[in-house]
Length: 185
Image (tube, rainbow, N blue to C red; front, side, top):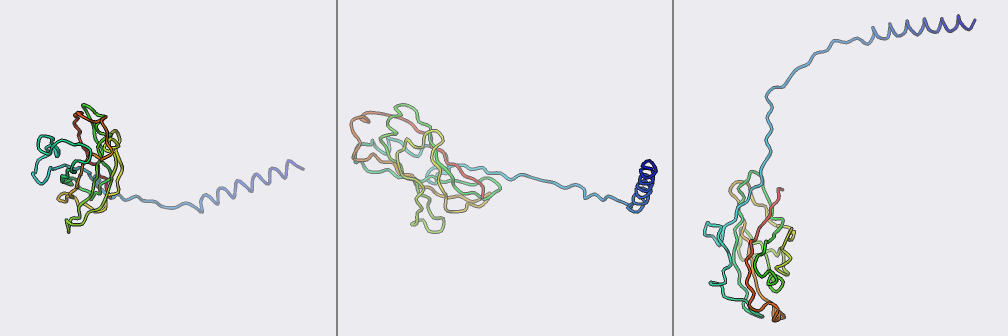
């Protein structure tokens, strides 16, 4: 008896599967949208010294004078050009020091972003020990959007030796390669 019930259930299940399979048959087709292209944008910046069109050193002790405690601050303008295809904003500054690198601990640096429309307005980005720019440098939050291909922004960089500096820095001489970093918006 159990065998008959089992056989009946099996026959009914097989019949439903065949009928169900036939009920769900559909026609299909595929269409293709050809020749799609994709391009990644670019973030490329270049630097220019004081509007000269050249990437030459901003600071030169034979022109700017030597630093001493309380000496006058020296301010220069660095223009950051956006040569890439995406709009950018300044995101960091770093420096590689060589020579008597202890001098970087004795110097202070201030970095401001100069308003593109009104150069008398500046936006502070960083102020502190010059040595903090070593390695990965400092992150900043640039204020202005620099448009793609033709945009640029001026950055004011001021270096000074605080009056609290002591004899540790006397007679030291170093060089610094200052770098700017930008990121896409």
